[in-house]
Amino acid sequence: MAVTRVQKRRIKEEAGNRCAIPNCNVTSPLDIHHIQYQENGGSDEDDNLICLCRNCHGRVHNNDIEDISIRTYKRNLVLRSARLFPHEVPYLEALLVGEQIELDEETVVQVRRLERNRFIRIQHLRRNDVYRLSITQIGRELIE
Ligand SMILES: [Zn+2]
Ligand SMILES: [Zn+2]
Image (cartoon, rainbow, N blue to C red):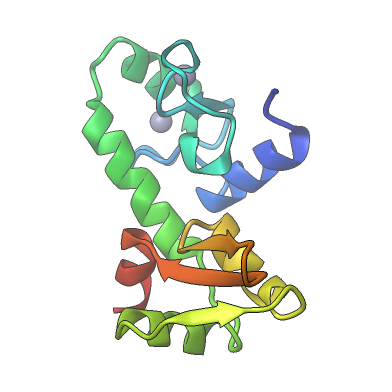
């Protein structure tokens, strides 16, 4: 697995095509950094990637910028760039107040984007062939 070009473009866009470190604002050259390092099992999924300028990227790897800060910046970027579609809002609101939502295979496609963005989890209950939704912490923050 590797980070695809489409992904790189998406991660850069998420940060506004500039370094994700607040007050840096450098726009080139930009690198894609693995928040959890690959050698420590960090994945190539979007939620583990952040756009940094070459200079800040070096500082992160030298531990001049704390890991916890990077995680906070990433979290803020995700929340800021998440524009909810109108049909997605009722699902999140219902989950927030603890309603149990189970969808069939046809309707579950409506919430796959929420799952990709890690705002909900979808569990396939094979016995009844339904998909049960649950909200994640970041999904809560988004809708609260
Ligand atoms: Zn890196
Ligand atoms: Zn920078």
